[in-house]
Length: 228
Image (cartoon, rainbow, N blue to C red; front, side, top):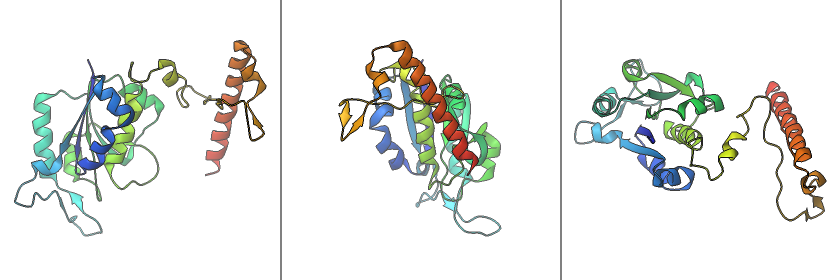
């Protein structure tokens, strides 16, 4: 059974343009995953299909209204039993490789993509089962976070990558070790050489070198982030 990801969005063009190219697109074409985008405006009332309004209590920015979300989600949950209904927020669980591994094993996921100053809290209280943060920074909209999330879990599904071992050896996949430096032809370019060990043909020594360099890269990562 292919992983199914439904996304409710106020910015479908941002999503659809990305879903038509690259890794996610190939996975969809090969029916390894299914991704469907729902336009929030199609569930809004009135001639202008308004999906946002000013926040109660004042303040800058606009808030996505509850009615379109309630209508869309209520319709979708009648047809699909979702393992998780996700909303991206600063106070959510931090998204990392371990979390991505877990979600790649799910069957059905619904993502609510926020915009402006966010969505009405009543939508979150009523429907959302997990709030997730993809990092300590601000994006212009939740659709970008939805793409990051979808890409990260899609590449873990068997068959999506041509080389399954590639996903298993990624940085953050193993504790305390990142990818080692990589090189390709030519052996010498502008006086810069490929390390001799990689040309040796000795796979045991090459493996040990990669392990050592991977540990070094991990230590550098920890050291740099402690200073932030």
